[in-house]
Image 1 (cartoon, helix red, strand yellow):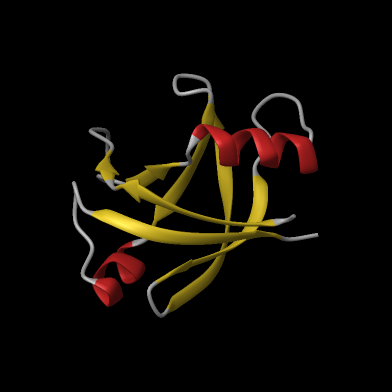
Image 2 (cartoon, one colour):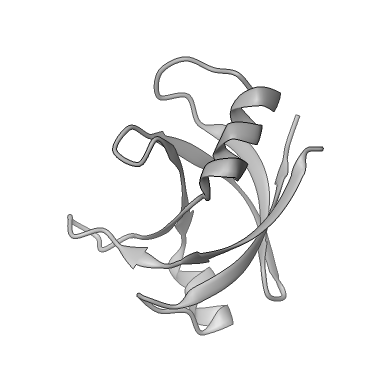
Length: 96
C-alpha cells in the first residue's frame, strides 16, 4: 500500500515565516519508512490531498516526533479554510 488516509491537527511553527504543519500518525510514518527506507533528513515525495485541494510536495522526517511532517502552504490553507488547531483529513500517496 502506498496511499494513506488520516486525520491530523494543524499546528503552527513558532519560527520565521509561521509555517503550518501536520504531523503524520505513527502508523503512517512506520509504513512510509517500510516503503521508502532512508537515512538522515531525506524528504519523501508525495501527492497530498485535503478536501478538494491536491498538490505535490514532500514529507520531512522529524526527530522530535519520530514521524514525518507535511507542510501546508498558504494557498492550500486558504483554499480549504484551514487554521491552526483545525483537524484535517489528509490523503497521501507516495510518488516514485
